[in-house]
Image (cartoon, rainbow over all chains, first blue to last red; front, top):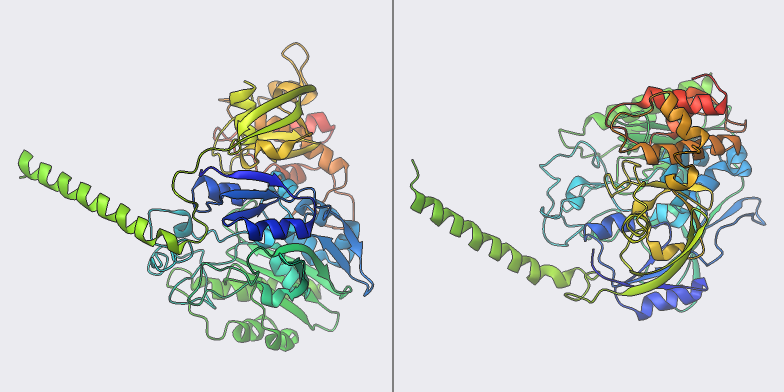
Amino acid sequence: MRPFTYSRAKSPAEAAAEAASAPGAKFIAGGTNLLDLMKLEIETPSHLIDVQDLKLDRIEPTAEGGLRIGALVRNTDLAADARVRRDYGVLSRALLAGASGQLRNKATTAGNLLQRTRCPYFYDTNQPCNKRQPGSGCSAIGGFSRQLAVIGSSKACIATHPGDMAIAMRVLDATVETVDPKGQTRAIPMADFHRLPGETPHIDTNLKAGELITAVTLPKPLGGKHFYHKERDRASYAFALVSVAAVVQPDGRGRVAFGGVAHKPWRVEAAEAAMPQGAKAVTGATFAGAAPTPENAFKLTLAERALGAVLAQARA
Amino acid sequence: MHGPGEVEVSRRGLLVGGAASVAAGAVSAPADAQRAPAAPKPAMAKVSFEVNGRRQSLEVDTRTTLLDALREHLKLTGSKKGCDQGQCGACTVIVDGRRINSCLSLAVMHEGDRITTVEGLGTPDKLHPMQAAFVRHDGYQCGYCTPGQICSAVSVLEEIRAGIPSHVSADLTAAPALTAAEMRERMSGNICRCGAYSNIIEAMADVAGAKA
């Protein structure tokens, strides 16, 4: 691990300003992904700004009838919150399907959104990787790609967003609130938060330099039945091959987003109109233009069957 | 057949190739905006926390993980370093009442925290009920993962009692049940190479007064 200096910020605006004034600085909250990457020198911050004192650890109702989740709310606490369990079950389920109990006790809401890909070549510092070292090439294309993206990828990168929480937040139309180094705040819809890799796969999100996430807001509850169906190589504590976050209404209409398939939560709103017709119609439209590798083409079939299982449960 | 001379040549070739790839790495390094300047000096920082009821004040390299602070600075070697990347759970300790992977946490981030390691749960003369149950049910073979398993197991029962749901809880809005399925799911962050899993669940069920 590269040496770094360390400080604890007192307010969100102060943290953002400090990040802008110290080149090479990074925020640290739970640290469960950042420290792992620092040990491998994939992340090499020269300064860490600890944000644990920012008092962003509360879940509060909004005037619009939704919830405002502080950036530092732990995954365990968000999943266990009575309002989330009752009104946003898809979010609770997604969180509980991710990581381990120990990690959920540390991992924060903002940190979860910012976790980096688990593409094996991103982690293997002996191999070229455009996300780790821009311009060096992509080892995953033509390499072991079973876990990797089937849609929205580019010639430069086929990595996936590894998380579960963001998939549920996408289906709920959540909004990410931030503050920048000048103290300006803004709200970013989940749809625009993560990026597709394009020619710049080293940039995961649309956050600007020094911009700090302060909260994620959920609109008022959607009702309906909530599902988070995760297919993975073992029954617990593994990243998704394919996951389905869905909210299904009594008349069969609803919303669906997929995880484990792209560089960002994958939701095609226009395809959701087909939900009453069944899974095949939805996934056909959702994954139009997919470009899987021979190793991960199975994900397209798996996505259809996973959604089929969810829709069958919704009807039961 | 290759003679010794040819081997020598190919070794030299490898060395040259190695040096070239290092140079290539150095040239493209500035493209990575996050890369720190070469060879920055280690930074030291002070931190104080409570470990197993005793106040501890340390001055550590900021890179020191909580696990290394416990093991190398405080000589509490019960907590183990298995994978050092949060996958195995051998380093599990309880911080302010919650189990965490101490290998994925910086010591300097724990100012004022209350930390419990396996040494703080019980002593050889007065075992914690979970430690006694692991002995009674053969919840280990080599024992390397056991301190983490025991810290995790103690926390799992508290998490179920506190009503925190899990991936296998059928009804999200109901209180989770003390079942073997619930305990198994919640223990998935603790790997046991010897495969003592079923006995670990027996031990936990014994302590919880539940059926495994």
